[in-house]
Length: 382
Image (tube, rainbow, N blue to C red; front, side):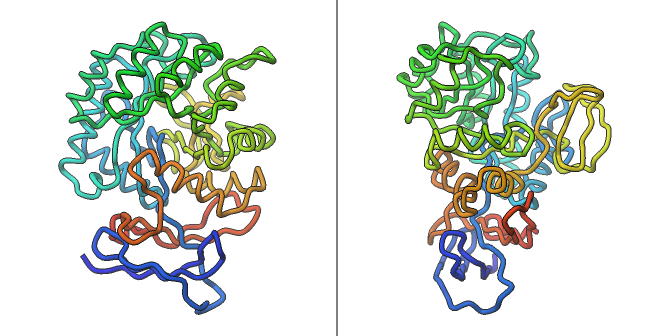
Protein backbone atom coordinates (compact mmCIF):
# COMPACT_ATOMS: atom_id res chain seq x y z
CA UNK A 1 0.00 0.00 0.00
CA UNK A 2 1.46 3.34 -1.07
CA UNK A 3 1.67 6.36 1.20
CA UNK A 4 -0.92 9.09 0.65
CA UNK A 5 -0.08 12.76 1.11
CA UNK A 6 -2.92 15.28 1.56
CA UNK A 7 -2.92 19.05 2.15
CA UNK A 8 -5.88 20.89 3.56
CA UNK A 9 -7.05 23.47 6.05
CA UNK A 10 -7.58 22.52 9.68
CA UNK A 11 -11.15 23.57 10.63
CA UNK A 12 -10.00 24.34 14.18
CA UNK A 13 -7.22 26.77 13.22
CA UNK A 14 -7.65 27.62 9.54
CA UNK A 15 -4.00 26.72 9.02
CA UNK A 16 -2.88 24.26 6.36
CA UNK A 17 -2.17 20.71 7.45
CA UNK A 18 0.16 18.29 5.70
CA UNK A 19 -0.83 14.68 6.46
CA UNK A 20 1.07 11.61 5.28
CA UNK A 21 -0.19 8.06 5.70
CA UNK A 22 1.84 4.88 6.13
CA UNK A 23 -0.33 1.99 5.04
CA UNK A 24 -3.57 2.04 7.05
CA UNK A 25 -2.40 4.57 9.67
CA UNK A 26 -1.53 8.24 9.85
CA UNK A 27 2.24 8.63 9.97
CA UNK A 28 2.82 12.38 9.96
CA UNK A 29 0.78 15.53 10.69
CA UNK A 30 2.16 19.06 10.64
CA UNK A 31 1.11 22.64 9.94
CA UNK A 32 2.75 24.20 6.90
CA UNK A 33 2.79 27.58 5.17
CA UNK A 34 -0.22 28.20 2.94
CA UNK A 35 0.70 26.87 -0.52
CA UNK A 36 -2.24 28.46 -2.37
CA UNK A 37 -5.55 30.21 -1.89
CA UNK A 38 -7.78 27.36 -3.04
CA UNK A 39 -7.15 24.83 -0.28
CA UNK A 40 -10.06 22.62 0.85
CA UNK A 41 -10.77 21.61 4.42
CA UNK A 42 -8.96 18.50 5.66
CA UNK A 43 -11.07 16.45 8.07
CA UNK A 44 -10.92 13.03 9.68
CA UNK A 45 -13.22 10.54 7.99
CA UNK A 46 -16.74 10.79 9.37
CA UNK A 47 -17.99 8.37 12.05
CA UNK A 48 -21.68 7.33 11.87
CA UNK A 49 -23.06 5.43 14.88
CA UNK A 50 -26.47 4.87 13.26
CA UNK A 51 -26.87 3.97 9.61
CA UNK A 52 -29.49 1.54 8.30
CA UNK A 53 -28.68 1.88 4.62
CA UNK A 54 -27.45 4.10 1.81
CA UNK A 55 -27.28 4.15 -1.98
CA UNK A 56 -29.86 1.40 -2.39
CA UNK A 57 -28.16 -0.94 0.11
CA UNK A 58 -29.72 -1.98 3.44
CA UNK A 59 -28.73 -4.08 6.45
CA UNK A 60 -32.37 -4.87 7.26
CA UNK A 61 -34.88 -7.17 5.61
CA UNK A 62 -34.89 -10.73 4.31
CA UNK A 63 -32.39 -10.18 1.49
CA UNK A 64 -29.33 -8.92 3.42
CA UNK A 65 -26.14 -10.51 2.14
CA UNK A 66 -22.45 -10.01 2.90
CA UNK A 67 -22.02 -8.54 -0.59
CA UNK A 68 -24.74 -5.96 0.16
CA UNK A 69 -22.94 -4.96 3.37
CA UNK A 70 -19.65 -4.54 1.51
CA UNK A 71 -21.39 -2.44 -1.14
CA UNK A 72 -22.99 -0.29 1.58
CA UNK A 73 -19.64 0.35 3.25
CA UNK A 74 -18.05 1.35 -0.05
CA UNK A 75 -20.92 3.68 -0.98
CA UNK A 76 -20.73 5.39 2.41
CA UNK A 77 -16.96 5.79 2.13
CA UNK A 78 -17.39 7.63 -1.16
CA UNK A 79 -19.82 9.93 0.68
CA UNK A 80 -17.23 10.68 3.37
CA UNK A 81 -18.33 8.23 6.08
CA UNK A 82 -15.34 5.98 6.71
CA UNK A 83 -16.47 4.47 10.02
CA UNK A 84 -19.86 2.78 9.75
CA UNK A 85 -21.93 1.26 12.55
CA UNK A 86 -24.59 -0.71 10.64
CA UNK A 87 -27.92 -0.42 12.44
CA UNK A 88 -30.35 -3.34 12.57
CA UNK A 89 -33.87 -2.39 13.63
CA UNK A 90 -36.70 -4.19 15.43
CA UNK A 91 -37.53 -7.54 13.83
CA UNK A 92 -38.03 -11.18 14.69
CA UNK A 93 -34.95 -12.67 16.31
CA UNK A 94 -34.17 -14.82 13.29
CA UNK A 95 -34.21 -11.73 11.06
CA UNK A 96 -31.92 -9.78 13.40
CA UNK A 97 -29.55 -12.74 13.52
CA UNK A 98 -29.58 -13.03 9.72
CA UNK A 99 -28.48 -9.40 9.41
CA UNK A 100 -25.85 -9.79 12.12
CA UNK A 101 -24.38 -12.85 10.42
CA UNK A 102 -24.26 -11.07 7.05
CA UNK A 103 -22.37 -8.14 8.61
CA UNK A 104 -19.95 -10.45 10.42
CA UNK A 105 -19.35 -12.42 7.21
CA UNK A 106 -18.77 -9.23 5.23
CA UNK A 107 -16.08 -8.19 7.73
CA UNK A 108 -14.48 -11.61 7.51
CA UNK A 109 -14.35 -11.52 3.69
CA UNK A 110 -13.42 -7.90 3.02
CA UNK A 111 -10.52 -6.02 4.60
CA UNK A 112 -11.97 -2.57 3.92
CA UNK A 113 -15.26 -3.54 5.55
CA UNK A 114 -13.43 -4.96 8.54
CA UNK A 115 -11.63 -1.63 9.03
CA UNK A 116 -14.76 0.46 8.48
CA UNK A 117 -17.16 -1.48 10.71
CA UNK A 118 -16.06 -1.58 14.36
CA UNK A 119 -19.38 -2.90 15.67
CA UNK A 120 -23.13 -3.16 15.03
CA UNK A 121 -25.97 -1.10 16.52
CA UNK A 122 -29.20 -3.01 17.24
CA UNK A 123 -31.97 -0.40 17.49
CA UNK A 124 -34.68 -2.34 19.30
CA UNK A 125 -36.55 -4.61 19.56
CA UNK A 126 -36.89 -3.57 23.22
CA UNK A 127 -38.53 -0.20 22.52
CA UNK A 128 -41.89 1.42 23.20
CA UNK A 129 -44.85 -0.40 21.63
CA UNK A 130 -46.85 2.84 21.48
CA UNK A 131 -47.63 4.67 18.25
CA UNK A 132 -45.33 7.67 17.98
CA UNK A 133 -42.28 6.62 19.96
CA UNK A 134 -42.22 3.28 18.14
CA UNK A 135 -41.78 5.07 14.80
CA UNK A 136 -41.87 2.70 11.85
CA UNK A 137 -40.58 -0.26 13.86
CA UNK A 138 -43.06 -3.18 13.54
CA UNK A 139 -45.33 -3.34 16.60
CA UNK A 140 -45.65 -7.13 16.42
CA UNK A 141 -41.91 -7.56 17.02
CA UNK A 142 -41.50 -5.20 20.00
CA UNK A 143 -40.64 -7.26 23.07
CA UNK A 144 -39.11 -6.93 26.55
CA UNK A 145 -35.33 -6.96 27.00
CA UNK A 146 -33.85 -10.44 27.39
CA UNK A 147 -30.15 -10.93 28.22
CA UNK A 148 -30.30 -14.43 26.72
CA UNK A 149 -31.38 -12.99 23.36
CA UNK A 150 -28.50 -10.49 23.45
CA UNK A 151 -26.11 -13.36 24.13
CA UNK A 152 -27.50 -15.23 21.13
CA UNK A 153 -26.95 -12.13 18.98
CA UNK A 154 -23.34 -12.01 20.12
CA UNK A 155 -22.73 -15.66 19.33
CA UNK A 156 -24.20 -15.17 15.85
CA UNK A 157 -22.11 -12.04 15.21
CA UNK A 158 -18.81 -13.04 16.80
CA UNK A 159 -19.34 -10.46 19.56
CA UNK A 160 -19.91 -7.62 17.11
CA UNK A 161 -22.96 -6.01 18.77
CA UNK A 162 -21.57 -2.84 20.33
CA UNK A 163 -24.62 -0.55 20.76
CA UNK A 164 -28.21 -1.45 21.67
CA UNK A 165 -31.11 1.03 21.79
CA UNK A 166 -33.90 0.31 24.27
CA UNK A 167 -36.79 2.04 26.05
CA UNK A 168 -36.25 2.26 29.81
CA UNK A 169 -39.96 1.75 30.52
CA UNK A 170 -39.55 -2.04 30.42
CA UNK A 171 -39.32 -3.57 33.92
CA UNK A 172 -36.35 -5.62 32.71
CA UNK A 173 -34.45 -2.57 31.39
CA UNK A 174 -32.16 -2.01 34.38
CA UNK A 175 -30.98 -5.63 34.64
CA UNK A 176 -30.56 -5.76 30.86
CA UNK A 177 -28.50 -2.56 30.86
CA UNK A 178 -26.25 -3.97 33.58
CA UNK A 179 -25.79 -7.19 31.59
CA UNK A 180 -24.84 -5.37 28.38
CA UNK A 181 -22.55 -2.97 30.19
CA UNK A 182 -20.66 -5.89 31.75
CA UNK A 183 -20.36 -7.38 28.25
CA UNK A 184 -18.77 -4.18 26.93
CA UNK A 185 -21.72 -2.97 24.85
CA UNK A 186 -23.11 0.58 24.97
CA UNK A 187 -26.75 0.98 25.94
CA UNK A 188 -28.66 3.83 24.30
CA UNK A 189 -32.07 5.24 25.24
CA UNK A 190 -34.49 5.74 22.37
CA UNK A 191 -37.96 5.17 20.92
CA UNK A 192 -39.34 5.60 24.41
CA UNK A 193 -42.24 6.85 26.51
CA UNK A 194 -40.33 6.24 29.75
CA UNK A 195 -40.68 8.41 32.82
CA UNK A 196 -37.74 10.54 34.00
CA UNK A 197 -37.28 8.10 36.89
CA UNK A 198 -37.01 5.18 34.48
CA UNK A 199 -34.51 7.11 32.36
CA UNK A 200 -32.33 7.84 35.38
CA UNK A 201 -32.50 4.20 36.49
CA UNK A 202 -30.95 2.87 33.28
CA UNK A 203 -28.35 5.65 33.29
CA UNK A 204 -27.45 4.62 36.84
CA UNK A 205 -27.11 1.08 35.44
CA UNK A 206 -24.67 2.22 32.75
CA UNK A 207 -26.55 3.65 29.72
CA UNK A 208 -24.38 6.19 27.88
CA UNK A 209 -26.24 7.38 24.77
CA UNK A 210 -29.53 8.89 23.65
CA UNK A 211 -30.61 7.66 20.22
CA UNK A 212 -31.68 10.49 17.83
CA UNK A 213 -32.94 12.63 20.70
CA UNK A 214 -36.07 14.59 19.86
CA UNK A 215 -37.28 11.93 17.43
CA UNK A 216 -38.91 8.59 18.18
CA UNK A 217 -41.29 10.29 20.65
CA UNK A 218 -44.96 11.20 20.98
CA UNK A 219 -46.01 14.31 19.07
CA UNK A 220 -47.50 15.65 22.35
CA UNK A 221 -45.65 15.40 25.69
CA UNK A 222 -46.30 16.80 29.16
CA UNK A 223 -44.70 20.22 29.43
CA UNK A 224 -42.69 18.88 32.39
CA UNK A 225 -41.52 16.44 33.47
CA UNK A 226 -40.83 14.23 30.45
CA UNK A 227 -38.13 11.92 29.11
CA UNK A 228 -36.61 14.58 26.82
CA UNK A 229 -35.79 16.94 29.69
CA UNK A 230 -34.42 14.02 31.71
CA UNK A 231 -32.02 13.03 28.94
CA UNK A 232 -30.98 16.59 28.17
CA UNK A 233 -30.25 17.26 31.84
CA UNK A 234 -28.17 14.15 32.53
CA UNK A 235 -24.50 14.84 31.80
CA UNK A 236 -23.76 11.12 31.78
CA UNK A 237 -25.63 10.79 28.49
CA UNK A 238 -24.24 11.77 25.09
CA UNK A 239 -27.08 12.59 22.70
CA UNK A 240 -27.29 11.70 19.04
CA UNK A 241 -29.04 14.15 16.70
CA UNK A 242 -30.26 13.89 13.10
CA UNK A 243 -29.29 17.22 11.54
CA UNK A 244 -30.79 16.73 8.09
CA UNK A 245 -32.95 19.85 8.19
CA UNK A 246 -36.11 17.75 8.42
CA UNK A 247 -36.10 15.73 11.65
CA UNK A 248 -35.45 18.65 14.02
CA UNK A 249 -36.38 22.30 13.43
CA UNK A 250 -33.51 24.75 13.74
CA UNK A 251 -34.71 26.18 17.06
CA UNK A 252 -35.12 22.72 18.57
CA UNK A 253 -31.73 21.51 17.40
CA UNK A 254 -30.04 24.70 18.62
CA UNK A 255 -31.64 24.52 22.07
CA UNK A 256 -30.87 20.82 22.47
CA UNK A 257 -27.22 21.27 21.48
CA UNK A 258 -26.88 24.12 23.95
CA UNK A 259 -28.46 21.99 26.68
CA UNK A 260 -26.23 18.97 26.10
CA UNK A 261 -23.10 20.94 25.27
CA UNK A 262 -20.92 20.24 22.27
CA UNK A 263 -18.81 17.71 24.18
CA UNK A 264 -21.85 15.50 24.86
CA UNK A 265 -23.43 15.52 21.40
CA UNK A 266 -22.94 13.53 18.21
CA UNK A 267 -24.46 13.62 14.75
CA UNK A 268 -25.93 10.52 13.17
CA UNK A 269 -27.41 10.10 9.72
CA UNK A 270 -29.93 7.35 10.63
CA UNK A 271 -30.06 7.01 6.86
CA UNK A 272 -32.13 4.39 5.07
CA UNK A 273 -31.43 2.65 1.79
CA UNK A 274 -32.91 5.48 -0.31
CA UNK A 275 -30.35 7.97 0.98
CA UNK A 276 -28.03 8.99 -1.83
CA UNK A 277 -30.56 7.95 -4.48
CA UNK A 278 -32.11 10.27 -7.11
CA UNK A 279 -35.28 12.16 -6.11
CA UNK A 280 -38.53 10.46 -7.02
CA UNK A 281 -41.26 8.08 -5.88
CA UNK A 282 -40.25 4.70 -4.49
CA UNK A 283 -41.89 1.65 -2.92
CA UNK A 284 -40.19 0.30 0.19
CA UNK A 285 -40.79 -2.82 2.31
CA UNK A 286 -41.36 -0.76 5.49
CA UNK A 287 -42.77 2.60 4.44
CA UNK A 288 -44.68 1.50 1.34
CA UNK A 289 -45.04 4.32 -1.17
CA UNK A 290 -42.61 7.14 -0.36
CA UNK A 291 -41.35 10.32 -2.01
CA UNK A 292 -37.72 11.44 -1.90
CA UNK A 293 -37.41 15.18 -2.57
CA UNK A 294 -34.39 16.98 -4.00
CA UNK A 295 -33.54 18.38 -0.56
CA UNK A 296 -33.33 14.91 0.98
CA UNK A 297 -36.72 14.77 2.67
CA UNK A 298 -38.20 11.26 2.60
CA UNK A 299 -41.97 11.31 3.14
CA UNK A 300 -44.90 8.93 3.02
CA UNK A 301 -46.57 9.58 -0.31
CA UNK A 302 -49.48 11.99 -0.03
CA UNK A 303 -48.71 12.94 3.59
CA UNK A 304 -46.43 15.40 5.42
CA UNK A 305 -44.99 12.55 7.54
CA UNK A 306 -41.35 11.53 7.42
CA UNK A 307 -40.56 7.99 6.26
CA UNK A 308 -36.94 7.95 7.39
CA UNK A 309 -33.73 9.90 6.99
CA UNK A 310 -32.16 10.22 3.56
CA UNK A 311 -29.14 12.50 3.83
CA UNK A 312 -25.52 11.56 4.43
CA UNK A 313 -23.57 12.41 7.56
CA UNK A 314 -21.50 14.85 5.48
CA UNK A 315 -24.71 16.73 4.72
CA UNK A 316 -25.47 16.72 8.45
CA UNK A 317 -22.16 18.45 9.21
CA UNK A 318 -23.02 21.33 6.88
CA UNK A 319 -26.63 21.45 8.03
CA UNK A 320 -25.88 21.63 11.75
CA UNK A 321 -23.56 24.58 11.17
CA UNK A 322 -26.18 26.30 9.00
CA UNK A 323 -29.14 25.62 11.29
CA UNK A 324 -27.54 26.38 14.65
CA UNK A 325 -24.71 28.79 13.85
CA UNK A 326 -22.05 26.71 15.60
CA UNK A 327 -18.54 27.00 14.12
CA UNK A 328 -17.67 24.64 11.29
CA UNK A 329 -14.92 23.08 13.43
CA UNK A 330 -17.50 22.21 16.11
CA UNK A 331 -19.83 20.73 13.49
CA UNK A 332 -16.98 18.53 12.26
CA UNK A 333 -16.22 17.36 15.80
CA UNK A 334 -19.84 16.25 16.23
CA UNK A 335 -19.34 13.77 13.36
CA UNK A 336 -15.75 12.71 14.02
CA UNK A 337 -14.02 12.79 17.42
CA UNK A 338 -17.21 12.82 19.50
CA UNK A 339 -18.80 9.66 18.04
CA UNK A 340 -15.30 8.24 17.69
CA UNK A 341 -15.11 7.98 21.48
CA UNK A 342 -17.65 5.14 21.30
CA UNK A 343 -15.72 3.13 18.69
CA UNK A 344 -12.15 3.05 19.93
CA UNK A 345 -11.15 6.69 19.55
CA UNK A 346 -11.65 7.12 15.81
CA UNK A 347 -12.26 10.43 14.08
CA UNK A 348 -8.94 12.13 14.87
CA UNK A 349 -6.01 13.30 12.74
CA UNK A 350 -3.09 12.17 14.88
CA UNK A 351 -0.07 9.97 14.18
CA UNK A 352 -0.97 6.32 14.70
CA UNK A 353 -4.69 6.86 14.07
CA UNK A 354 -6.50 4.95 11.34
CA UNK A 355 -5.80 6.73 8.05
CA UNK A 356 -9.33 7.95 7.32
CA UNK A 357 -9.21 11.40 5.72
CA UNK A 358 -11.59 13.70 3.89
CA UNK A 359 -10.93 16.74 1.69
CA UNK A 360 -14.04 18.88 1.28
CA UNK A 361 -15.19 22.38 0.42
CA UNK A 362 -17.57 24.23 2.70
CA UNK A 363 -18.71 27.84 3.02
CA UNK A 364 -21.06 29.35 5.62
CA UNK A 365 -24.69 28.64 4.75
CA UNK A 366 -23.96 25.54 2.65
CA UNK A 367 -26.40 22.64 3.01
CA UNK A 368 -23.85 19.97 2.14
CA UNK A 369 -20.12 19.36 2.04
CA UNK A 370 -18.61 19.18 -1.44
CA UNK A 371 -16.27 16.23 -1.22
CA UNK A 372 -13.05 16.27 -3.22
CA UNK A 373 -11.15 13.25 -1.92
CA UNK A 374 -11.73 10.41 0.55
CA UNK A 375 -9.04 8.16 2.01
CA UNK A 376 -10.21 5.12 3.98
CA UNK A 377 -7.69 2.94 5.77
CA UNK A 378 -4.90 4.57 3.77
CA UNK A 379 -6.54 3.87 0.40
CA UNK A 380 -8.00 6.55 -1.89
CA UNK A 381 -11.66 5.62 -2.43
CA UNK A 382 -13.07 8.82 -3.91
